Image (cartoon, rainbow, N blue to C red):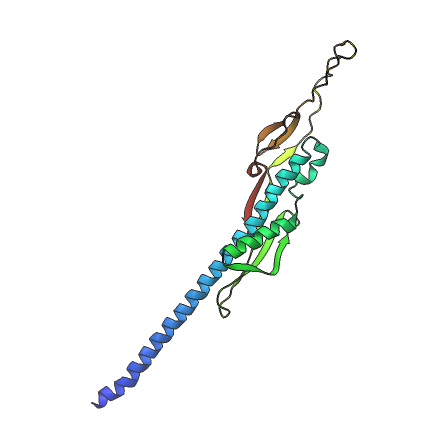
Length: 201
């Protein structure tokens, strides 16, 4: 009986130790899960901002597509409303159970965004994470020089002149593919053909 009495405290201590370890493992696992959720939300928010900016770039470029002299900022992937893009970041953070936090949504000088979010979980276990998404241009433009002098215009009777047809704009190459801009029906490749959006380490 004495041995049994001595063993009982050891048994209680062992059970307490196991319970403590189980609690620690649970807490660590929960914290890791929350951090993963925060990182997922940050990744989604950063990508959403960059993708919105990419769509803006294409729309803005189309507005000046017949004037290659104004293409510079679009070719560089830098002509967009960062406020509107960051609104998309906030929306996607919310969809993933988080909210913009800290520096929130910061445009990158090279094109893209760095976004910081905080999870909306219990106050005792919130997590913060950041992610950057970059916009990488896929196009280059070299204005083409005329290969030869245009033929002289054909004389026409007074009052019967025809409008001179505009030549297509050539020299735009996107991801190795040459594109020709038709002045009559100007268009551009899809946004994904103009710019790559990706998470940046």
